[in-house]
Image 1 (tube, rainbow, N blue to C red):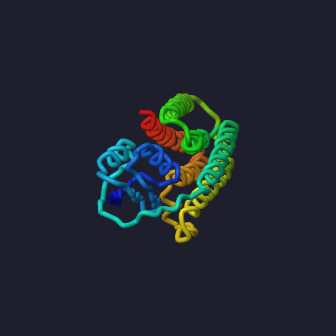
Image 2 (cartoon, rainbow, N blue to C red; image 1 turned 90 degrees about the vertical axis):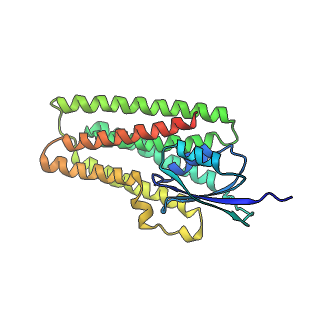
Image 3 (tube, rainbow, N blue to C red; image 1 turned 180 degrees about the vertical axis):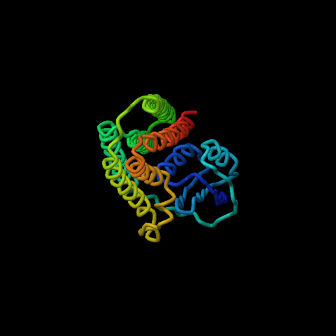
Length: 268
């Protein structure tokens, strides 16, 4: 007797870059009824091909707090799924890009006294953690994966709290103005790096998505953050104040902490 295959479509409102795709993949890893996952990041949709009921899948997706909502479930005749053998290699490339930019933004952020750049570097590090957990947990046990996720999550929260303390110190102290030109130049480079990461991972999905869609680029959290730091740099120069940089830095630290809690959800 052949087991019937179901297709359940989820809308995931906060899935706007590949690192969230990897979070969902890791969260659903180990659910034996799942045959295939088909991600559509530009439209924030996930199609899960599975046998049996979708309750456990739905519960796991909701636990990640990415705005997951089940749209529909129907029977499907689809049974043959092509696995992307290139995925591991592409994850290594994207991990390397994110980690290199974490070092660049952290270094230039400290030198130029920009909390926006320092905060954005932690966001890059957060994405590196997600890709890293995906790679290092491949073939590993669920316990190993959960342990790595827990360490990464708490480390990220610790760094973000240190960042918050530094923002408060600069807000109430007489700190020198950050170097606005460094903020703008480095953020433009980070924006390009994020675009390349999205392109690499989306290109691997199918020929239809080989060309980047504007919606894919400009719905990404990372890209919005980069644009925020660029605007903060312009305002620092225009207003002759470090407040725009501190405000953007604070917002990004909040985003980083939210990301850390999502990583911690994998450790439960």
